[in-house]
Image (tube, rainbow, N blue to C red):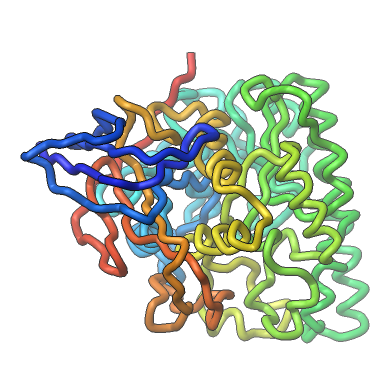
Length: 445
């Protein structure tokens, strides 16, 4: 087996920062201690750098199958390892949708041959596949995904009786996109009456409004409390929703958990003037006050996870008028550098960042032997340099779509190395073309 010895780095793990060496043997971490020596190991000197567990991104859209002109499992997972992300959970709104066990396993088969990062896929719930969902092995995938508001792929689940049956039929994590469709359609009709298809982009957060988000998320949470379901609310975007979540018990005991995405922590509605549809997401980027409330909830543990909702579209698609410009944008390569920028600004500690991006997704989804730097765990690691400035340019963007909402942004920190199961998948701007990714396994009884 190949041995790698990472020397002199500062390990950020389990609430501590300590200078240690880390010995990898094959796929696993075998020793963590100061002053390790091993004559047979390849040595990487991480002096002056920090070592993190590999980032676990619980929500991405890599577009395969069916929308591969936007991205593929290969292209987007490759970009992800360039951003220190070693594990992803890719969503079911592809073409065809992953709403049967057969279609779900077909995605696993593609990933087993092409993914650069570890992978799993949630099963997509619909208005009419409850019986298929009941046949699902709870250790086979990351969980269940419900679109309680429409988005790319139109997997809207709007039959309230079916939603309740789904909530009662599984103890897997049910991840939900929460926006009230009736409210959105009413708002959209109002703005189309005024502007036609060419609605100014700054009205997107008024169409995909605070009310639409709160109505849907509050109903989903009420139903989860009624049924005892294990609910995880994706990509929160409003201050009002923060009162729906609690921080008085450990994450492992929570039945209702919350995620925020990088774009809602970075951008605000003031950015639509410059960025236009390139920051058009569902749910919408909202006000600076909403953004501040999301940060507050993230830091006081009402929000449990930071993710990307990476969702690429081509530049040409994004340059359409409002009603034809799809929502979503690519983020996996730049999410960790952006969070590190917020750390450098003093907004978040490295320990908290690791908790939200590494430890908590592993706890929440009960992922086996990942999310921490521990002896006996898989060697998923990211090495970062907090004093390595660089600028996002078209030339260094790794996404298939070739653009980023961060284009032109200067970041002070960079990812220098990414290990996936002990394999050096990325080093100082160079991607390994070899793959060593694995299907996630889970600790679910």
